[in-house]
Image (cartoon, rainbow, N blue to C red):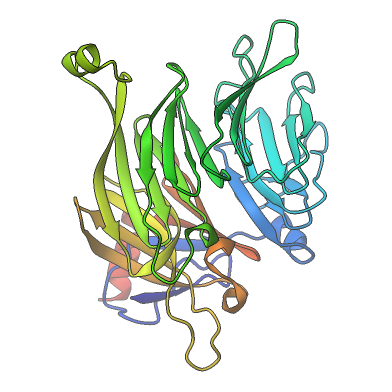
Length: 375
């Protein structure tokens, strides 16, 4: 395992161990206006778009930054919450942002126009919100989904009022959610369910095993669509890759089943707790995690790690693992960290309450520089 320090924004990778092993990822710490924000507040959640990144804070603020950490000027200030922002969702074109919080409010803010802004107070904590990727589109119904003690779909009618459809209400609190085209995945006390919004039916529940001597509800479920039909799930110390496939015509006609099925193609357990995951190359994942062990000297948290894993059906091969020196890591737990990415640009945003570090694969110039340096 190599140890990576990202203390200097210009520093890419400094390996303190295994110096002769060629690195796979380089790291740059985000600075500029982000540091001014973090001097007085902590990050609670993030959403990365190709145009910008949006961070929510513990004090309920919402900030728009470019990918270097500079504040993006915007038409209107995004309304803030009374307490920490729990989740941020951005539509496909980066024109609308939805946020939710334990203050019971769902706030939808347009960056180009106020015409489709929404502010709802449902009177109970909201852990999760997802905007329709096509929310920006006229005639889309301006849909969004809210997860509290049930899962509800909101859509505008032709009279501009909101129609609410409850999609699920019997499985406990919705803790996380990810929407991709016609499919939405969410986690509850029982596991992860995938719903087909076109057919308005569930494609099944992926049950999650309760960890020994730990509670499933104490860990955030990390959901990511790596493409239109592949769902990555990382929860506690287990990773599962699922593919949504069409049933064949015989299955559908003989048993009156949904047109699609969720097919788990890989399930494996890691030796660390999973804080986030994202696709890299074919059958490879970038996984952010924290060690299960604690520092023997002071019982504080150890450094978070970023691993590149090659997954198989029931196992994985560790390609490389870097130990990260993020600010204040000794005080943070698994749920304090998150990982977001720009898949098309191969950029991975490692987020802690006091830091954002961007990882990206070594390119040819980086490899040549490393090879020359190491003779």
